[in-house]
Length: 375
Image (cartoon, rainbow, N blue to C red; front, side, top):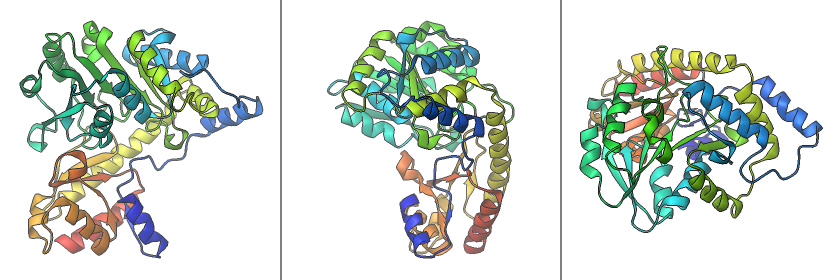
C-alpha cells in the first residue's frame, strides 16, 4: 500500500499515507552526532560479527535497567534490524516440519520466516472481542510434540494490544509444563505504551524461563531509527552462537556507524523516547475517537505502539463493489486518497491497520475524508 501511495503521489495525486510502520520524527540530534563522531574517529571498518563491545555492553545495561534481567556478552547478538534477529533465530532452531505458534493478528514477516526455515506456522486467532490477546487455553489447544517455538509480540504490531503481567504469568505457567519449547518475545515497541502503563515481558514475570527465552528488540521504533537497521537478540549462549554463525555467512556485522549511533541511543538520556511516546498517545486518542464516529467502523483502544486496528466489516458490507478488506483498502486509496493496510496481511480479515505515526493535520484530513465518503 505504501508503494501504491508513493506511485500515486509521484503522479501528483494527494495521498495521505497511514500505512507506513515507522515514526515520522527525525532521529534525535544527539544520536546523529554520535554517528558523525564515529565517522570522524574512523570507525568505518568491519566490527565483530555479533556487534561491537560498546553496543553489547549498552544492550546488557539497557536490559538490566528496564527488565532486571542480567546477560553476558556471549548472550547478545546485534543484527541488521529486528527482522534479521527473528530470521536468524528461525534458521538456527527450526528444523523440517517444526511448528511455531504465532498469535494472530501477527507481524507480517513471522510466518514467512518460519516457512523459509522449513517450519510450519500454527496460528492462534484473537479478535477484538478478546482484545487481540490469546488465552492459555487457546495456546494449550495447539501445542503438540512438534511445537518448537511460541512467539509473543507485546505491544503488538498491528493491534497495539499489550499483555499485562498477569496475562503473561498465565501463559508462562502453561509453558513451564513444556520444557522443550522456545519462547521468542518481540519487545520492539516496549517503550511506546500509553496511560503510564509499565512494560512486562514473559521473562520478567517468570525468570525460570530464561534458559529457553529470547528477547528480540531494536532501536528502530523507540528512537525513530528505522533506516539505521539495528536490532538485537538476548538469550541462551548456544542459540546466540548458532544465530551468529548464520549471520556470519549472510550479512556479517551490522553497520559500524549505526552501531555507534545505537550505543548512544541506548546509553544517553531517554527524554526523546518520552517525547515521541507522548505525541503518539495524543494522536492515538484523537484517531480512535474520530474513527468510532464514522459509520461502519469500530476501533478499539490501543495500549501502545503507533497503530490502531479497526473493525471494518460493516463498512465493507455497506460499500458497493467491495467484498473484503483488501478491496476496501484499494477503495480507500483510489476514492479517498488514504493508504491503510488490510487486516488480511496480518492474518485477520475484516480489519484495517492505521498508522498514526504522522502529523495531526494529516490525521484530521484523513478522518474528514473517511467521514465524507462513508457517513
